[in-house]
Every structure is written in structure tokens, then in C-alpha cells.
Length: 238
Length: 257
Image 1 (cartoon, each protein chain N blue to C red):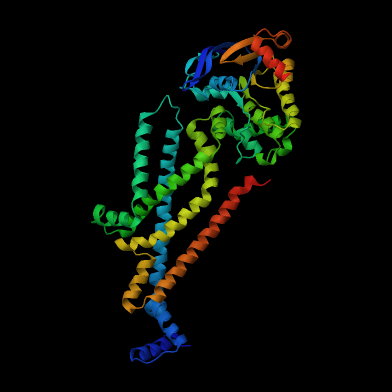
Image 2 (image 1 turned 60 degrees about the vertical axis):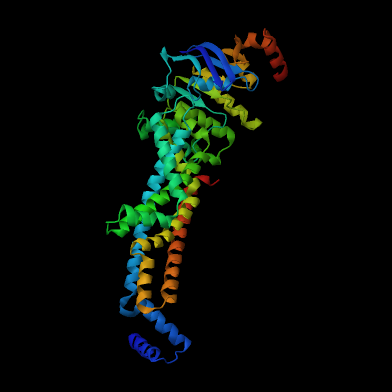
């Protein structure tokens, strides 16, 4: 579904991604882990060109992702941010319906109905007409996730979705992500939640020094790490 | 009570060199400045012109300032690899505009517009609107640019990641938040603009100060007309401030917790 070929990104002289190649199949849940500054977030942001790669190619469904029809591509790749990035001047429901209506995917009535259905699903239907400021971090992030879902994306990209949350709110967000994974959603998740990676991921990828150092199913990844740097990393975080 | 008769009586005394009591002097000069031969009508017309010029210059200034701010922000937000040459050119024009307008006095700009560029025009009000609007636009553009830059880049990223285009995201997500953030600064700019309309008198614009000067040249009395229009400006500004406060409170709805 997504094919990445020799992706490179450097900021000036600093090389962040040094040739990353990867295939992601439909229904995969890929967790990207690695020390901070290793380029995993940059890699994610290069997939939908929030960062412009300095080299290499990204293909979505066989089509190369280029600047030309990037908006159509992004509509298929939902993204969830570390800091939620809900629109503070719009109500919760407006946050969810905004893009589908503006892009003429749905009428306002259809989008409203879908928004209520999604809110029902995460148990926040009573918050539909409040503003994001009144919500807790966990609630905000769950709404950010269904805002991305409202575009009916083919794949969801998660950029450290629980890193900005208070510890007691991490669970509710991970729970929703697990549900999504079970429902067959293709997901690429940059995370520090090793428990989540072990339980939900179909593949866990360790990135360091701008390269993929290890790419394995979670069982093997955590129980028999080969790469010495990964061993060192795991000994610190587990 | 015969107000006009009383005025005539005091006028006679003053003319023949007699002394007026303080209240008589006050009554005489006040009547002379504002009521005699319906002079209040001139002030009223002046207020009308002042408000018209303010409103038109404001619209022009905000439109111009908005466009300039968006051009400069869009230019600065381009990824360093791909710079659009057209946007680069527009950005240079915008920067020259802001530099020249902010770097020269308003009075000089008015005189240049009125006596050089539009020297043959008799429509002083229109020339005044144009000059004030262009002047205000330069300041407003910097205010709006500051507002646009103060919005978390994550907002733009969130909009773009949902598949919205740059312009749509600006229009629906960034600009509404920026306006809320800059409203106090914009309000300040509006108030400056309202008071600066008095400057168009120098090119013959018939606004409030012009009315006062007309009365002054007939009566050889400066105090009452000037204090009068100062009070009128003050009241106008206070009304303006009150309206802005109301608008701000409405826009803050989403901030309530």
C-alpha cells in the first residue's frame, strides 16, 4: 500500500534520514521506535510531505506522492499529532466535519451524522458542541483521531500520540488505537509505548542514525533483538 | 426663553466694549461657536465626513493590509528548496510598500497625494480616503502578519494533513484565530485612523476640523470650536472602543472554560 524507496532528508548539513526503504501492506500496524532525534517523526512527516524529503520516493497505492496533488494524497493519509492540533475556534463537532464538508466529500448533514456516530463510539457524544479548550488531553487526542477518521483515510499516521498526555490519560487513547488496529485500519505509529508496540504492532521498526536498524514482528523484536544499539535502547526503556 | 435674543443682547454689549459676566461670556461664545446661523450643521457634516473617511479608509486598510500580510507570510512559509518567483516579486513589492509608507510622515503623504499626484482632483474626500487607507494598510499588514505568525504552526499542519489546501486552511483555520489575537492591536489602529482623518483638512477635506476652522475664521474665537471638536472626537473614540470590546467578548466565546 505504501512503498518507501531510499528516503532521505537532511536539514542543511544534518542528515536525519539516510536512505530508508520500507513496504507497508494494507492492515499493517507499524510501530516506529528509537531514541529521540533519530528521525522517526521526520520519517512519518515525510510520508505525507509535511516535511519535504531531500531524496527518494514515496508511493501510495502505486502512485508516487508528489507535491502536485498532495492534498488528495493527504486526504487518504490521516495524521494524528503529539499536540492534538484541534482547531480551538471550532466546536468538537465542527472540528470533525470541517474537512469532509469543505472538500465536498459529504454534505453537512451526512458529516454531522458521521461525527455523532464517531463521538458515540468513543463515548464523547455529549461534548459535540463544546470547544476543545474544555476537554482533557485524552479527550482531545481521541477527538483528533476521529477527526482524521472522518475523512475515511486508507492509512493513519500517529506522531507520538500519547507523549503529551498525563499518564492517567494514555490508556484511553491507546485503547482507541487498539480498537482501530483490530478493525483492520492500516497504521504507522511513532511511539514510546513499548507495551502497545508489543501487543498491537504487526511489525516494530527500530530507527537509529537515520537508518532502519531492525524490522521484525514484535515477539522477535523484543525477545531476540540482534542489533547492539537496539539492545542498548531496549535495556534503557524496558 | 428667547435664546437668540439673549445672544444678540450679549453680542451688543461685547461689541461696544462692555464687560460680560463669566456665564454671559460663556453663553455668548458657545452660542456663537455652535448655534448661531445653524453652525452645528457644519460640525454635523464634518462628523459625517470623518466617519465616512474612517470607514472607507478602514476597509481599504484592512483589505490592503490583509493581502500584504498573507503575501509576506506565504512567502516566508515556503520550504527553502522551492521558492515561487512570482511570490518573491510580490513579497518585494509588499516590503517596499511597508517600508516607504511607514518611513514617511502621514502629513507629507497627504500633501504629496493631494498636491502632486492628484493635484487636479477636486474630490478631496476621496483622495483623503485613498491616502489614509494606503497608510493604514502598511501598519495593519504588520499587525496581521504578527497575528498570523503567532498561530501555532501545528494548526496549519493539521489543516493540511486533512487534505485542505494552503489557502483554504489559511482562510478557515489560521486567519480567524489570528484576527481574534490581533483585535486589540487592530482596534488601536482604528482609533489612530479615526483621529488621523483630521489631517485631511490640509488638502481641503471637509471633515470635523475643517468645520471648526471655518467657524474660527468667521468668529476669531478658537477655544470653543476646538474644545468642541475635541469632545466630539473623544466621544466617537469611546463609542468605537465600546463596540470593539463587545466584538472581542463575542469572539472569545470559544475560550470559556
